[in-house]
Amino acid sequence: MSRILITSGPTRQYLDPVRYLTNESSGRMGCALALAAIEQSHQVVIVSGPVDVKYPRQAEIIWVISTEEMLAACRKHFPHCDGMIGAAAPCDYRPAKVQSNKITKTGDPLDLHLIETPDVVATLGAEKDRQWMVGFALETENHQLNALTKMRRKNCDLMMLNEPAAMNSLENKVKILNRKEEVIATPAGSKEAVAREIIAVIEQTLIGTTL
Image (tube, rainbow, N blue to C red; front, side):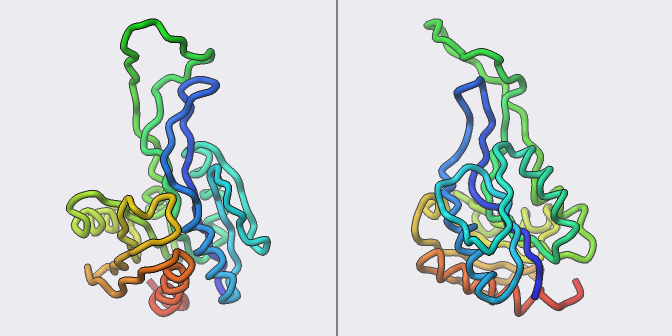
C-alpha cells in the first residue's frame, strides 16, 4: 500500500476581487484517479482547486484556490507520500498586480501584465527524494515531443499525454510515456476506466521499485 498525493482541478488567479483567470478543468480525472487508487487499498491525499465533483470520502482533501496555494499544500504533504500524480491544471499565469477594487469599464482597451506562476510538478520533481512522480501533459501541437520534453524538465517517471477534448469531459484518451520515451499504454474510455489502467501501470512500473 502506498500513500499517493493527487493534484486535481483548476486554479484561479484573481485580477480583482471578482474576476479571475482559470481553465475548464473539472476535477473528474483527479477524482477518478483517487477512486481507482483507493480501490487498490492505497491512501490518497487530494490537493484540489475549486470543483463541483465529489471526491471519495476515504481521501484526505485539501482545498486551494491559487497555483501558489496548490504548491504550498503539495510541498507540505509530498514529503509524507510515496508518490504524486499531477492531474491538476494549474493556471500558468497570474497578473503582476491584483487590483484591490473591481476594475471598471472606461471605454479603452485593458492591458494585463501577466507573469508565470510556479510550476507545481516541476518544483516537486526537483525536490523529490525517494518518491515517484507522474505528470499530465495536455498538448495542442507536437504532442509527443512536448510531452517528453515536459517529462524530462519536470523530472517525472511517467507522463500522461492527452488533448484539450479531455477537459470538462466524461471521457479521456491518453498515451502513457516512460523515461525511455516509449508509449507503454494507450488507455481510452470513461475517465474511471482510464484511471484504473493508469493506476495499474503505476503499480507495475513504479510502486515498490527503486527509481
